[in-house]
Image (cartoon, rainbow, N blue to C red):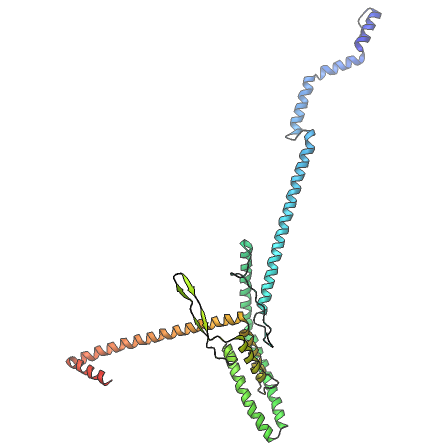
Length: 354
């Protein structure tokens, strides 16, 4: 347009058109900022402030990808935390169940047809499952620490508890003896003699039960002779046979003996002062012998103690025989030296006399 207007102005005026004021200003600006300089400045600005960022047309897609990765990491971390928390809760529940089973161990009392048997759980071994890996190690450590603390606590409180229980038993005995003496005063001579004879019989039964209970002999508490015999196990050609158990007392017989003896030792019928204490000891022994797990553990302890006792007896006999043999040999040597040539006929005559 400018060239058209310029040529028309030249045709009309017969001379070149003078440059306009705006054209002079734009020309001056072009001379001051040539295109090459402007391009160089743009390159330097992009290098200084752009860095390694992506171009503007790719920035939206890159930011979305980074946001998705960050969100996925957060979700994965939350899932791991929830899984770890669930595992810890499961271990805590199992640990609490184990503690409750330990507290209830040995507290059941037999009665009626089946008795109240404590439920025993299986921990570890071939019959149970334990946490694996680091969780299992932590659980085992917690279990060992709990057992140590309970053992220390029981060792500290055992003397105090024993003293308190003995004082309570003595108080009950004195109270029952006083009640029995008061009843005797109300009886005539014949009734008094009969009650005293019965009290002596009751006292013998109570004394036997308490002595056996203090020695830890549960079969003797019930008056049962434990003739159980275990044979084996036997090993032959990488095969094991047994163990075989003979003369085992049935649980049904133990319950029958317990019921009959409980009628005799019950504090309402037995007039001895320590009848209540004997009745509790009878219940404890019957609860152990009627529970298969506790009875099995108790029989194993009896067998191991019997084996240790037999081993000690055999070693003692061997030691005594060795000492006797050595002393006899030394005595014969001294006698032979003293008797000289007469030692042989004297020894022969002595042997014939013996």
